[in-house]
Amino acid sequence: TNPQDILKTLSLSFEVFPPKKWEDFPGLYETLDELKGLHPEFISCTYGAGGSNSKKTAEIVSHIENELGIRSIAHLTCAALTEDKLLSTIENFKNAGIHSVLALRGDKPFDMSEEDFANRQYKHPSEIIPILKKAGFRVAAACYPEKHYEAPSTEEDLHWLKHKVEQGADALISQLFFDNDAFYRFMDAADQKGITVPVHAGIMPITSAKMINTTINLSGASIPKALSDLIATYGENPSDMRKAGIEYAARQINDLAEQGMHYVHIYTMNHSETAKEICGLIK
Ligand code: FAD
Image 1: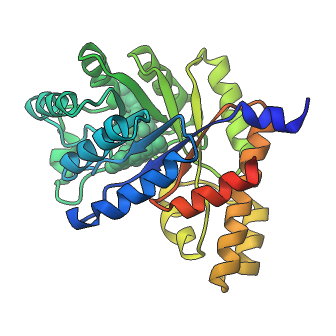
Image 2: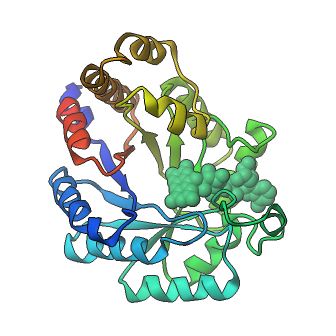
């Protein structure tokens, strides 16, 4: 098969996050116009763990879906949700013309006590997925190719992942990873477990050495030697590091396509330029 044909089967999606200030919205909307030009399958927008950004998420997703005409997914975390808050959020999402939700637990919000977190109303997204489905949303959930940090074992994590799918998740979006082999092992294990919904592979371009200490540590993703070598070589030089990080992400995506994977979710961090450069390398 011609490699170009394989790449054409890729379905790309992007993720953005709400700016802190409303006055920064026009900048994000320009970014979204640029991302539209890359013909994504969808663009998702994150949600604050404590729900503080919920209005912004709704506004952005509504803009993507209704103004730009691109499918969009609103993230929704349930860690700080009460039943009333869930129902009012569903109402707000519906009024904003939102059709799809990524149901998440979220981590403990910084302003929530350990006790309140332990006693939260909805322990896991599997408890809100049926409610969202009943309200008419398409629902996605998160998955972790290298296991969620709280799960005692891969097997147990997969057990609960299957439960999320059984509760109605129509698709899965993966945590970022840098080791494609870890993703292929996860896909095989998920397949054996009977998880057959589409899985969107999460790819984050490392465009600065600083990102290693923040994003990567939080995600728990392992760092293959090729990536640590690259950081050692280019880490001190911001423009070389950015270029090498973009090339690494594009290599990961090309390999995913060659291995027959169809769905790639790029964590763009609101940078359309980075997304464009990656796409330029995979066409
Ligand atoms: P869960 O599915 O609840 O999983 C958490 C742990 O509980 C796992 O160890 C799992 O094995 C276990 N588990 C799951 N279900 C059950 C069950 N029914 N009973 C017992 N154990 C169970 N965070 C944000 O704050 N905002 C965002 O917008 C956001 N977007 C994200 C997007 C993606 C694609 C991903 C991968 C993560 C995102 N996160 C976001 C981070 C996410 O909130 C954290 O990773 C959180 O720690 C787990 O969320 P989850 O929905 O995977 O939780």
